[in-house]
Amino acid sequence: MSNTIKTTFLLGALTGLLMFLGHLFGGRSGMMIAFVFAMVMNFGSYWFSDKIVLSLYRAKPVGEAEDPGLYSMVRNLATRAGLPMPRVYRIPQAAPNAFATGRDPKHAVVAVTDGIRQLLTDEELSGVIGHELGHIGHRDILISSIAATLAGAIMMLANMARWALIFGGGRDEDNSPIGTFLMAILAPIAAVIIQMAISRSREFQADAAGAKISGDPRYLASALEKLAMASKRLPMASSPATSHMFIVKPFSGRNLLELFSTHPPVEKRIERLNQMARGR
Image (cartoon, helix red, strand yellow):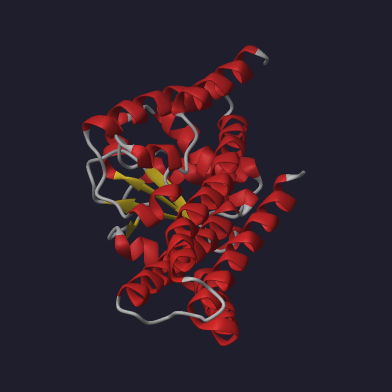
């Protein structure tokens, strides 16, 4: 199954899960409301996801005069990748990380933290920028934004269903309260697993693209090793809903939530990149 078909199927599964929760919570009318809600949220994700996430991290636009080295690097790599020049933003945080956003390549943004500029060499940073341009070229950011929006809506409805049952409301004569309560607990877990399946496969693809765009897989492999170590020492102040957007997890998981990470293990990513370097 191709990644495009797989992603379409998984996004459909998220929408179906949201509609099922709506039916559980309000019957047929609840299902229709959930469907309309999903469409509205998808529309909002398409048009406004970049503005929302940039505002969330207080990102500032970077012009060529402000940081000619970074601006020139992004422009050269975008040209090599056959992409329009994305807007460049900086995030005023010491934790080293980066992400891309935007609904399509013509409206794309590459954002880097102050910390990543200080930690990485130019070659390593080119691997990171290449990775983010890979996401832009594959239109991964739009897909992951929609997935995150739907997963968030499912979690919100599940919480509403649980509270309604606790206080004696939201019970359908066709559904037992115990069954409804269990589904309200399991649905968010299923949503996270689906979102994880969408994000993880695309990280490997973006790594391969980043290695090709930057010219050497070892640049990105070295960058990932440094970033993984730094994220443990200096976790980034970030929202879990947007953690899938960053090149490495902004924080270090130390509990069962680690099992539901949207990123594949950094060690496996580095291993694949080193294999690419040996095969050149």
